Length: 518
Ligand code: XMP
Image 1 (cartoon, rainbow, N blue to C red):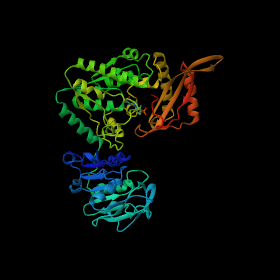
Image 2: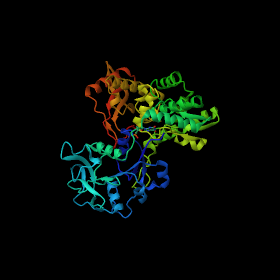
Image 3: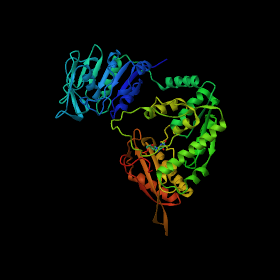
Image 4: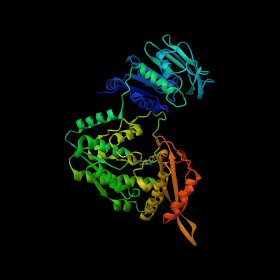
């Protein structure tokens, strides 16, 4: 059974992913593809039942303005254009777009209904005459083709809602996908109804579909998976295990950079509870001896990444005759985003994952989560019976505690950090805050300060606490703890962790900071 598909054509808007989020919330399957990758082949593969044209930063008046192929207007499915999507639709179908001097709108705006109430607007303009919407446009549509009609206007967008009711082509100047467009979700749902989309994208159905696909692809062959204990690799492993059982071997590398009791917990859960074929390798000495004397963050990351690959490769070769490598890649990692900047993007941090392996080992990839967003992975994890405390875990970076220990890494510092971190996370859980925070952790700073405990002088390390809220880790805000929580936690850490006599709280957002300290 195949779900109905909505194709989202991306013109590079900052909020394109939100369109997909809204659709998924309605249990509708959708895929985002860049405008310049839309072709007959993709259309045949997806066979979309509706198309949404996203917003974007360009102007349709530019001579090289991004445009999709004309053919999308001949597929015969309903189309919704949003902001830039509306303007390019008008430009291609015979309307007119005018440059914005004096008519740009950014932020909150109000749209008034015009002409008859169409199905797209069911449930809108019921309570009030106007609807609050969120605009972000410089140019605006100034004329529409004769088969289109206006159904809503705002002060600076005379064609805020337009449509061709016969073809079910609709376009809006505002962004219905953002929450500031108060009834945007209703408009999107109406559009999906007009396209006769079935709302049946459930994790239960996905689980069955994925298991069957894995069985078909793998056949009798062997699969390996690097298990870190994080949500993504756990869900990947359990899902594949359900499909092919013993043909899957998971490799867990304890690199000496894990949190307190982490290795024991991960190994116990996957062997005792899930009965996975798990090879746990203890390579603490290898990693720590290679990291000895390194204080540069990038060098640390690269050293760890390289060693990880070496260890993994060695273990995989021992298993022998492996054909597939399973990875917990998520949908946001594979969306090919449209870059208008032209140049290569700057590397802020070399992220560590096992992406470099297939080249070396000639393995085929299986990525069963690559259609899912993080919250969907968590739902799938629940479906698979993974305990809540594992599913709700905060993200933990591949290089582990190495990047929470700025400067040189020593066993002593790592032990101090593990103890402080455990107390901090325990405090957060006790206060019922764990699930309100995207990620929280302690950092041990490479500075010692003077303190006084009892009647003695101390000269110990400083511990920084970090807690952030975020949607996807790309931007983040610090979590506003109560002062009482902070002072209680600081006291507990200082009283119980030998080696720390001072605690600070990091209130930097991202940007300009990053979530991790290195
Ligand atoms: P930054 O520090 O870049 O982190 O703001 C954003 C998110 O990514 C995590 N992170 C990593 N995850 N491998 C990973 O799998 C890495 O090398 C890595 N570095 C950072 C970080 O914990 C945060 O959730």
